Amino acid sequence: MSDARGLAAKFLPAFVLLVGCAFVWQTHTQTPIDLKAPLRTTLPKFPGYIAADQFLSDEERRVAGMTDYSARAYASHDSIADFFTLVSYYDRQGQGKTIHSPRNCLPGAGWEILRGDTRTLDVDGTKHVVNHYILKNGAATTVVYYWYQGRGRVVASEYTVTWNLLRDAALLGHTEEALVRVQVPVPEHIASLDDSTSTAALAKADAFGASIATTLLRDVSRILPKRGG
Image (cartoon, rainbow, N blue to C red; front, side, top):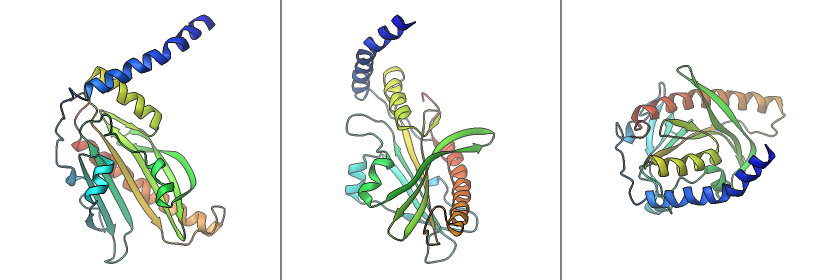
């Protein structure tokens, strides 16, 4: 058994390099697959809330490298948004055009991670693991759910996403995928995660975020291509 493991470890770097080369080659031969419906049709409304489209600058789109996106703010009143959604879609991925992990972008945007873990969403009887973060920036606190969705999968781990991307590029010739995010600001000032008032406010935002994320995950599944096209 130890010899087999040693042999696998010996050839693993070469295997990863081979798959990586195949990925680079497939970026030149991939055929983008059309969505089943326009991206803007994802969660156009939410009961009891008014949805307003948000727009990224040309520079933000260029840096992100996305093919298309849908960003919205939802408010129960005219002035304050109660939650935000973002679905950024890549019809194919290659060198210089891959999904950027929100976890890497948060510190640069001034957000401090107070807690980071995963949560499980039950969508029509199927359980999906997604990322769950509590973030703080000055006096603002927000709850974030995000995940990677495409080619028949919903994935939280960036490592798994990378492996699936390399494998599918080499074997399927398809790498279409979406980054999906739900953000719920916490209206109360969070003094401490251990404070009882803060705990109640976070629990409320968590439950609300999970409900939105479940609905959004289902709706994104509706428009994405099936696995392998």
